[in-house]
Amino acid sequence: MPTVTLKSVCKTFGEGELAVNALTDVDLEINAGGFICLSGPSGSGKTTLLNMVGGLDRPSSGEITVIDKRVDLMDKGKLAEMRLHSIGFVFQAYNLIPVLTARENVEFVIQLQGMPADMRHRKASDILNEVGLDGLEERKPAELSGGQQQRVAVARALVSEPALILADEPTANLDSVTAQTLMDLLRHLNDDRGITFLIATHDKLVMSHARRLLQMQDGQIINDIQQR
Image 1 (cartoon, rainbow, N blue to C red):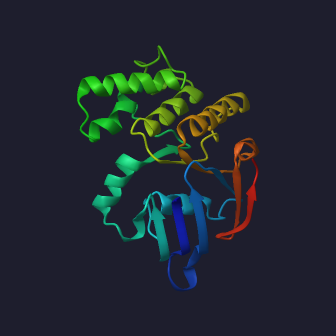
Image 2: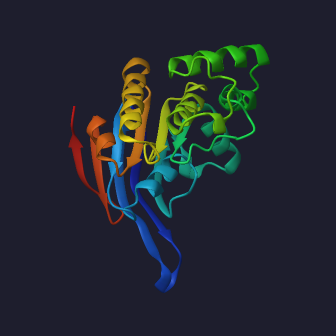
Image 3: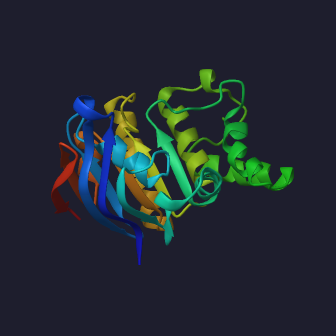
């Protein structure tokens, strides 16, 4: 059963002479457990497609099904509920809350879910340990390196046990050694937990880790390459 299905998805920004077609008739199926990278130049539609799948934006036309639910038909409340429980996000800029510790940043998601405090603490600590941050739970983002902050972001994406994780340029602010370590971690999580990953990237290192590489240009998928 596919985790993600897009049928004839189009997205246009602006109107009339100022209209820009960000996505044009995109058809795509992503099976559960996939590790997929979207590649292509700036403006090719990678981030727009990622935002559509995550329910952060709506298509101009077409159908988007994520984990058996038509996200293009959901209202804002249902989309927020789905993101909270079923989809994890990892962003280029980390998007951590600066006044919270690493553990508190990770706990934030499951606090919104209503999990009791003692369970939150234990679960957040276990996830931080899994991503290699044992002993750094009480540090705030400013006290962590870029790679450590991105690991906190990965832990936050994992803590709600989502079926799907969306990542937008996750290595953009990392040096090559740290980026390699992060990608090894994401592949391990994919292998070990069966989480489906969809990653938008310019980074050839990230592309080399993909099981499936989707090359985009001018709002369309022009190549679909099975790698390993």
